[in-house]
Image (cartoon, rainbow, N blue to C red; front, side, top):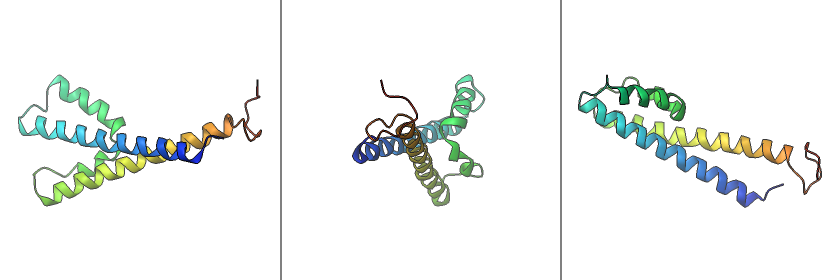
Length: 112
């Protein structure tokens, strides 16, 4: 089984990536919305990518103006997105260590 510190690094890296994906996607959407570019090809592509890369963006559905409430929703959505990415990385680590856990001898995959 892989070490616990390696697992923590993987989960932390995934959570950090999830946070920055939400910041980048939210920043791009704010720019497109404030400049009236929501019906362009780039905006449609960003919407398709964001559907999968930022699953917690549904929290931002009613955020139509820039104020403290919108900022709070945006930051909490980014933190929740980081938690989702970290949880998925943790589950992937558990599956990987169960299937390929060679040093404990109890993995599903046969040792070479």
